[in-house]
Length: 199
Image (tube, rainbow, N blue to C red; front, side, top):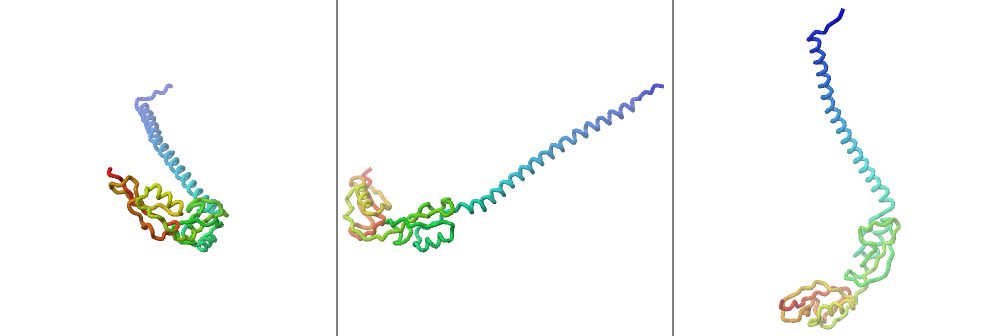
C-alpha cells in the first residue's frame, strides 16, 4: 500500500524548517558579538601586559643602569659632593670661571640637570671664581656694540637693553646700570638704555 502525505503533514514540515532557519539566523549575531567581545578583551589584555612590562623595565633596568643628572648649580663644592654621594655618579672639579653666582659655588655643570646618564658617570663642575672689582671707563656716549665687546673682554655680561626715541645716533648709550665709575665685579651684568633714533 502506498502512503500519502496530506497537506497538514507538509505544513508541519515547512513550519519546522522555518523554525530551524530562524534559529540559525538568531544565533549568528550572538556568535558575532561573542567574537567581538573576545577581540576587545584580548586587546585590553595585550595593552595591560605592555604597560606592566614597561613599568617593570623602567623601575628595574632603567634605575639600575641609568640615572638623571641632579642640579648642582649654586651649591658649594661640599654640598655638591654630598648630593653626588647619594647617587651612583661621581664628581670632578674642572676649574674656575667668572660668573654672577657667589664665589665658591658651582657655576657650571656638565652634563646639565635632568640629562640621562649611565651609572658612575663623572659630573664635571666649574667653580665660581672670586670676582675682584674693576673700574670701567664711562660708557655713556659710546656705541652699544663697542661697549658690549668691552664688557665681554673684562669678564662682565650684558643684561637688559632698553631703547628710547631720541635725537642721538642709533645705538648710542644714554645711560647704564651700574653707573660708570662705580666698582664692578667680574661676571656682573650691565643694563643699558640706548637710543633708537627719531624713527
